[in-house]
Each structure stands twice: as C-alpha cells, then as structure tokens.
Amino acid sequence: MSLLELRGISKIYGDLKALDNINLSVENGEWTAIMGPSGSGKSTMMNIIGCMDKPTMGEVLLDGVDIAKESAKNLTAIRRDKIGLIFQQFHLVNYLTAVENVMVAQYYHSLPDEKEALEALARVGLADRAKHLPSQLSGGEQQRVCIARALINHPEIILADEPTGNLDEANENIVLDLFRQLHEEHTTLIVVTHDPEVAEVAQRTITLEHGRIKSDEINKMFGRN
Image 1 (cartoon, helix red, strand yellow):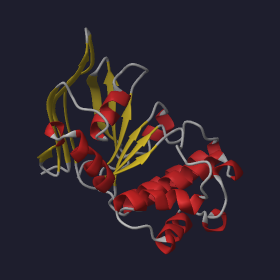
Image 2: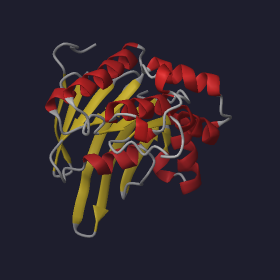
Image 3: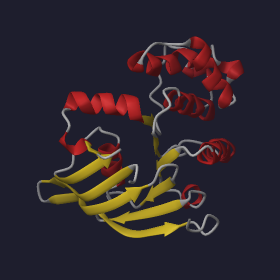
Image 4: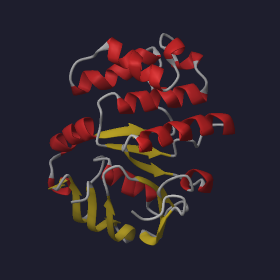
C-alpha cells in the first residue's frame, strides 16, 4: 500500500475547479516535486495533503485512512503527528530563539526537549545559532530552522511549499543538500516548487496544469525501481 493516495480528488470553488479528478500515489521514502504555473492547483493540492483543507470530492488516503472524511480536530492531530511543514515565508515566532521555535513544534506534539531541539538544529548546521532570534538570522538560516522544526517530531511526510523561493543560490544549494540527505534516509518528501532546478533533483516530478496532472515523470538519474 502506498503511503499517500489521492483518488478522484477535485476541489471546486463555485465555477472554478482548482483540482479536477486527481489520481496520485506517493510511496514511502519517495521524493516528489509538484510543479505548475500559477493557478495550476499546486497550493490547493498542498493544502489538502497537509490536512489544511478538504477536497470537494474524492479520497485522500494516508496510511490507508481517508483523511478527507476526518473532522477538523482530527485533521489537526494528523497534521501534528504525521506531517512536517516547511513554508516559503518561514512562519517563525519573531520573539523566540531558533531553538525555542523548534521546541514549539514539540510542545504541540508531546513535550519540549531542548536537547533534542538542539540536535535538530545541529543537523541543519545551526548549532552555533540556536540562541539567535529570527531577525538575527539570514533567510537561508531561517529556512533551515524551519526544516529542523519540521523534522523534530519525526513525521511520515515532509511537505515543503516553495522552500527555496526566498533564497539565494548558495542557500538554495544548502537546502537541497539537506533534502538529498533526507531522501537517502528514506524520508518521504513532497516539494511544491515553480523552479525547474529544484524539481530536477527530485526523484519524481508531477506537473499540474488547470487542476489536472499534465505529466508524471521519474528523474532519469533515479530510474524506476
């Protein structure tokens, strides 16, 4: 059974079909990029996979459970326990240090553990920046705090929305190297991006157009298992 399956997913707003009969499976440990122009349905798909919205029609199976049928309260718990979110705009709490921002995610999941949070920051190369506020960090450093925060509760899926969109080339490469490490560790990654250079290093690229899947391709460097 696939880790994630979308079966006949549509999202309709009035006369607009943001997603139109999407069928998609993501295997455990797969690194998938989702591409498409503005208005193609990327953000809508991310919100549905990330338990931040529900489809109008269809099933969203995560570990065999149809999360499309779950209550808002249950969706919050599923998102907390199973999904690590990385945002383009970072969404760090500006009056908390880097390590405290990571510990916030622990607080909503179980119990804050500063030692574990520090280890997560060390993993993304920020051990020496743990006590700095977001305003004292570069954009690339803030994004790495977001990655540490997303990883801290050992989620089944890392879901990243334009994770390199606000970064220069050097910091983009640092983030992509972290994603490569996660993929080697069999972490399931779903990365929404408009950048072909980000998509081409993923194992698989799905391109959306007008709410439908236009193409679904395996990167030639990975081949098909």
